[in-house]
Image 1 (cartoon, rainbow, N blue to C red):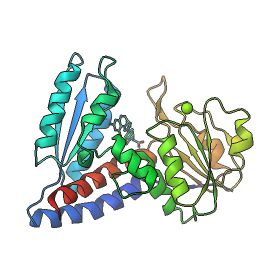
Image 2: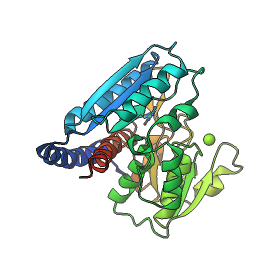
Image 3: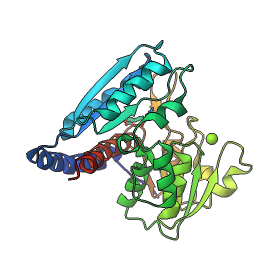
Image 4: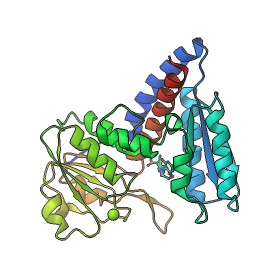
Length: 284
Ligand SMILES: Nc1nc(=O)c2c([nH]1)NC[C@@H]1CN(c3ccc(C(=O)N[C@@H](CCC(=O)O)C(=O)O)cc3)C=[N+]21
Ligand SMILES: [Mg+2]
């Protein structure tokens, strides 16, 4: 079997086209959705991701603004910026790019964002609502993963999903969303013993370890849907996933590439959240 490659980039494009139509409609009603991205410091990877976000906004007609602050910015200054953005009616979404410099508490910064403007879905109130199954702004990568799996035409309900990685931004929330789609979910992580024993049972395997090329075909059940959330910059400068693509392609039914898989879906879900947040705030 050779896997069908799940082109996240193309799925993302079609969702962006739908969003562009929706945004044009909102503009006729006087509402221009607005996203502000705050970037502290000069991490090149962060700058590259942020460029992707501005480009996405431009594509769908969202007004986007970038606030660049030097690495020496204090937590108080950053909290002050967030307070102003919380009060600005033209700003519907606030995204503070992570990671932040070590002297700034990410927890404090995330908690300071108004939950209705938290388009990352990282605020404890939004996380709590997600856990409860309440309608809320969902975290972008997990939401993008679910959308991608749905595009395979695979029924999630009743399937065994195995998630590797237990981070707050991917592993934990994606496990929860899969369970809400009625999958039976197993969560594995860096301390899991006999990883293959679990992963070879997976109908759906979501890999979010942050370790380049750690999953090979010996980990995968023939015919599985494999979603690679890894974005690892290797020495050559190349971007690679957590999955050995060429190997796993021989055995999976569907496989996401890196780049061009989950990444573009993440940004698209951010655009979607910004539109949802704008509607909610404008009561439209
Ligand atoms: N507050 C916050 N929210 C985030 O959502 C957030 C963050 N901080 N910090 C960093 C991570 C990482 N992240 C990515 C988004 C898109 C791609 C993406 O589109 N990647 C392209 C390739 C991009 C390239 O070539 O560099 C792809 O996979 O095809 C990757 C990574 C969002 N993050
Ligand atoms: Mg882990």
